[in-house]
Structure formats: C-alpha cells, structure tokens
Length: 559
Ligand SMILES: Nc1nc2c(c(=O)[nH]1)N[C@H]1C(S)=C(S)[C@@H](COP(=O)(O)O)O[C@H]1N2
Ligand SMILES: [Mo]
Image (cartoon, rainbow, N blue to C red):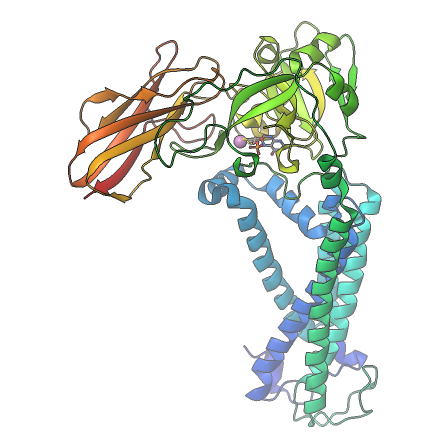
C-alpha cells in the first residue's frame, strides 16, 4: 500500500518527476496515500489507452496487423505452447479469440496501472519500460506475415504519444495529491497552474488531473472508434468481395437428394449456412487479401513453376462439390465440423501443369498470414474433389473462410489441408518440410477419423414422457457411412435410420424413434460403420495429435 518514503515528509525524490517540477511528494496519511496510488494507476491506464488508441487509429491506414494490439495477439497465438492452445480451443471453442482478446485487455489494463504507479516513484524507470514495450510491440508487428517497415509507424507514434501522456498525467496526478509539505513546486505553471500554488490547496490540482484523465480517456476512445470508422469507410476487401459474381460451374454438383435432412426437429441443417459455419484459424485479424493482386505460386520439386491469378482461376473450368470440413480439435460429439457446397478448381489440374518431380510426396500450402499445411501429394492427385475453392454455398468465400481462395480437401482434417487465404504451394517432401501444426506436435498427415454424434436430444434436457426422437450426424469422408447404431441405456445396439446420402465426402444424418422411453434418466450412445463395414472405434482418444475418437454418449431424462 504505502511506499517506504511516506515516512519521510517533505522529501521529493530526485530521480523522478519531482526533479522535473512535477513535485512528487509523499501523500498525506489517510486521504492521500490511497488516492495517490489510484490516480497514478489511472494515469497509467489513460496513457496506455492513448498509446493504443493512437496506434489503432493510424493502423487503419496500414496493414491489418500493423495494429500493435492485434500483432501482439497474433504473435502470442504463434508462441503459445500447443497444450495451452488446445486447452483454449477445448474450453472456448470458436470463442477462443474473444477469450484471448479479453485476456490481453485485462493484462494490458493491469500492466498500465502498474506502470502508472511505478511512474509515481520513478518516471524514468516507467518511461524506459514503456519504450521497451513499444519495441516489443514493434517486434511483434514485424514478425507478422504481410507487414513491412512502414507498418511499424502506428506503433512508433503510439509509443511516443503514450510516453508523452504518461509524463503529462503523472505530473498532474502528483500535483493533485494533497500534501502537508509546504515545499513549493519547482517549475510550476507548465500545466497552466497558478505559479507557486501551495500544495496544501489541492482542489484545483485535483480537478485538473481528473479533467486531463477524462479528456485523455475520451480521446483514446474517439481515436479507436475513428480507426474503425476509417477502416469501414475505406471498405476495402469486403466491398471488393461484394462486387464479385461467381461463374457457373463447368461441372455442377448433383442436386441434393430428397431426404438428406433427418426428419427430427432440432437437427442441424444438412448444408451449413456460411454464417453458422465453424471458424478455426490462427488469424486474430482476418487477412485482407485483394483478389486483384492475389497470386498463387506453385513451385519446389516441379518441372515447371506455375503462377495463377484470380481472374484466370475464375475463368477456368470450375467444379462444384459438397464436402464436409472437420477440425482435428473437434471433441467426440463436438460441432467443429461443417458441410458446404464448394466451387473451385481441382488442385490436380494445377499440379498437372507444374509436373511434380519423382520423390516429392507433400504439398506445403502457405497462407497470406503465414499459416501452413502439409498435404500428401497423392491425396491431391487421386481424383477426389480437392479444390482451390473460390465459392462457398453460392457466394464468394466469406473473408473469415479464406477469401479470395482457399483449399478444401475431402478426407483430411483442416489443419493439414484446408489452407485459407492460400498464396503458395510448395511441392516438397514430408522429410524436408514441416507445417504450422506439425511443428507443434500434431500428426503430419491428419486423415479424418470415422465419427458419429448425437445432435438430438441435447445432453441433460428433460423431455416429456412418450416417444423420444433421436437424431445425429456421422461421417466417413471418402467412403461414406453404411450403418449407424444406437444403444439405449446400455442394452442391445439397434440400427438407426440413415438419411439420404449426397456424396461420400459429406456427412450423413441419421434418426431413431424410441417409442417406449420410460420416465427417468437415460443414456444413449451412437456408433457408425463406413462403407467398407469398418466399425467406429470405441477407443477414447483426445484430439491431439491426430483427432479424437470414441463413441458419443448423451444423458437426458424423460417424464
Ligand atoms: N490460413 C489459415 N488457414 C487455415 C487455418 C489457419 O489457422 N490459417 N486453420 C485450419 C484449420 S485447423 C481448420 S479446421 C480449417 C477451418 O476452416 P473454417 O474456419 O473455414 O471452418 O481451416 C484451416 N485453414
Ligand atoms: Mo482445425
């Protein structure tokens, strides 16, 4: 609480603001001490807000990750140990970015308050700390893919503004604290105060500080919001996307058969609307890739390097396919999977132009924001609908789902195949290169495991007595689902009714009508079989390192 110096009345410290005329004096017992700390903490918080508000505003004119906060968050995501990331995704699911934002906000708030309090004792030490933080933030910005030296400007200017604000507010805070010392401030007047005003008349000083803090806080908010407004006004990539019209597919997908949707209320839609499609990526700020300058470079172990632009891609013979995308982080029964109708160019055709050299066994795809995935070369050539996708459910890809171009590969988890904002394909070997998640301990290959889940009823609901309709989803990309069974309260396994199958690459719904569920607690389990008759394993596995397994189980009660 109180600092050691509080016992030495009238002694301003010499290595800090006191020597600069801001007259830091020991606060008076009682009213002074707590209020002093609080005010200095507030000074730190407002200075930080001005620092980040300024940087945020300026970053609207530079690369998306020129915002030091965004860059720091993105950098944090990259250096976070895999276990912590898995834990965060497990805990927060697709809200992991919000959780990270709140976490960073709280840490920044606490840090700013501490620096403000430190500045009360030594403005010099606090200033050094702010500069070091500024340098660390510059380092974070410069490590982001797609940023250049000029993108450091928002952080540099923000840091200077933050430093200035810290000095200014610390001075005002110090003068706002009532003191029994009669020592006159050395160089009063800089903040427009009465010259040599006695420190024993605190009222005007206190008001000056609070006014300044309120002004600073308001300015920071205006700057941050102003940045958003500028960004929105510049419209950028979102507007470019809105203007795009997808070409008709050269090879359209067959219309969905009637009955792909299981006749059970509360089932998720067979085709996941874009707005409901799960989103998982390491990008804290959605990359803004302009289709007009987008290029895909295909190189490495190839006879012929190939470059592809967006216009050329849109003019080629595009294929339409229903494919279920699945995240390796999906827990048993989880919802990190979605099914969409994609439009794109078979990657096979691009590879045919490049002609991979013998010995190559992997395609390392890299995104505009530096994510990478290792996809087995043979998977991309074996005839399945592995696409360089430009369309999702009849629209250009949403920005969050990889606009302008992403990969979609049936049968492989997203982390080894579904690179969004893709800009580079390097033909290489698993022995020579590692992708983003492989470096962090995940399996390099990542085929999707045979899975089934119960969607209806939800766990722990209470249902009216009588008939209970069960429904769910199963997937075995590449082969298809041939059978689903449910087990009621540990009894015999019974065959469920399969909904229609659209393609072997997309999921299949199932239903089961339980006519005679008795009042009380119940447990149902589900398991699926793929088209070759392989039964889904009951063996429990966590998502890491190559996908969860085990039978999904739901408890609920009736009556
Ligand atoms: N650029 C980029 N692409 C990426 C990722 C990423 O972090 N960055 N994550 C992958 C993972 S782990 C998954 S599961 C899918 C999810 O795609 P979606 O967000 O469109 O559902 O994207 C893949 N593509
Ligand atoms: Mo994923």
